[in-house]
Every structure is written in structure tokens, then in C-alpha cells.
Length: 197
Image (cartoon, rainbow, N blue to C red; front, side, top):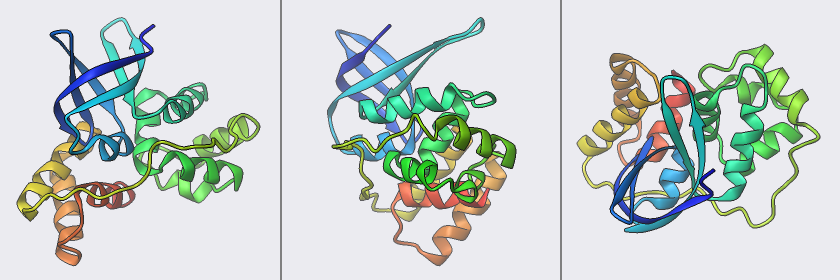
């Protein structure tokens, strides 16, 4: 098992990161929270969870151990796979997710794409005694400074497509969000779009 990878951030999008370590480029699937944490940084130390399937070997990367721990807890719930867990962690920060579980807030979970009422209830029941507030949360919300609205649109749509949404629907949602609030950072656009789609 790989605990973490430390190296140069070669490529960073809201859903994916390429981290080079000792001449090897590792592709990591990341959440929007991890993207926000590493955006603009040339190097990083990313905590890893490896998923080995018959048809693929996937690496999921996290800015902190707390986010990885929540990811593992989410994937332990029946019906929640790695991509669904990543979607939840892209829609809610680790501290927000802990609060949602503590408050038994089904509505916040069902607002995430792919989470129905039964899955939300299962997450709340299975994790209510496992999730405790984690001190010193490392991942916090922030804003990136992407100058051009076109770049924000392009990056947001690309991230939503990588997360499994159709391009046309993603484009429509992003355009609608930016029409109302043209100064939003790409992370905020994606988070808003995740609630709309």
C-alpha cells in the first residue's frame, strides 16, 4: 500500500493530478477540496488510496489524512464506490461532511449526484458512530485566481465531464452560473454545478 507520494505537481485539474516523484508520473483522482488545497503550488505531498480492480489500478489522492479517512469510511458503506465517495468529498468539505453526518442531514447528502435517499440514510446510519470531529483539518475552502471567464468555463466543464456528467449539461450549468456570478472561482463554479446537475 502506498501511504503518500511527495513530488512536483506536473498537472492539476479539479478532478485529476499528475505528481512526478523520482522520474515517475503518478495519475491521481482527486476531489475538489484537494484541488483547492494544491492549486498554485509547485510541489506537494499527497496521501494515497489505491484501488485495484480487474480492469484498472486507480490511485485516489487526498490533501490530508482526514479526507482520506472519510473517503475510506464512505467506501465502506454498501452502495458507495470510490467515485461516489470522491463526488461527495467534492461537494462537501471534510468538516462539512462531518457536520452533515452528525446532524443526520439527509438533504445535504441527497443533493450530491448519485446519492438517493436510501444511500444517504445508509451513510448516516453506518457512519454516525464512526465519524468524530477531526482536529486540525488540513483542507480548507479557498479561491483560485483564474483570470479569464473562458478559462474558468473550460476548466469547470472539463472537471464535471471527468466526474461523470455529460458535456452539454455541464456546459449549460456552468454558463448559467457564470452568467449570474461572472467573478466566481473555478472551485465555486464546480461546487454550484454539482448541486444543480
